Length: 315
Image 1 (tube, rainbow, N blue to C red):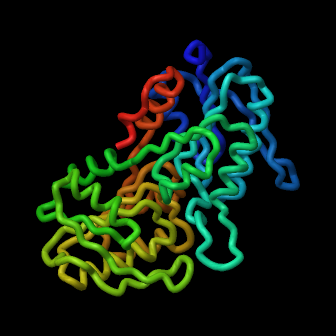
Image 2 (tube, one colour):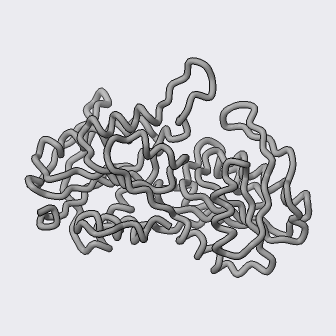
């Protein structure tokens, strides 16, 4: 029986601190694995303990640098598949390339589908992830996908702020469903930013739909990359009379000028999770507050290992 198999949790180098916290919740030691690079940059992996017959979980978000972290994940998968475990489950809190999920121009790839095929082919038997850029990406995998949400953790953080006159804001039309779910749980009104994106990593705010005058606005987003959209949204809200602006984001990619932009922006605080490890610059920024999803992921791993239902976590 699967539940009689020993539980092993391994970590890639993308976010070992998160894996340590997950193992702490599960009250187990992290699996021993040696990872390194040859002098030409090729990656190397060796499993340093017996995984035969075990139920194995690999924790590896594929954030920056996405190519290195993805390739490291594939190599770990191959190494563990050859170690004769009962099953290998990929715990990918953040899925890189997820934004390339459709053909939005002629002759472009659907890279999210390619990544899903690579992970499946490398030996994954199941995937556990957090807040995919589009829920339909689950269908790119030919194996079971457990798609969890960081909403409960972020909603509780918003409650703790005890803002005098809070209002939730969607940074674009595509994020309305997410922001509306937050607003429903918090019993708050919702405003929407009318955004145009003339090119990748550049957005222009055209209008604000909703009256934000005198409100303490909380922008609800999933991925914060260069922070251009977030800062432009905050400035537009302040121009239209908002008293203060906060923001939440699940995946703190924080690439390029993101932290400099946030530090110079009118945003009071950006609340993010630890699906991606923060750089030193981001960790020391007075604008960034990071929350842990280790308990959520640890509980999901425990239930998957024991063959118990995880549906109560899909909220």
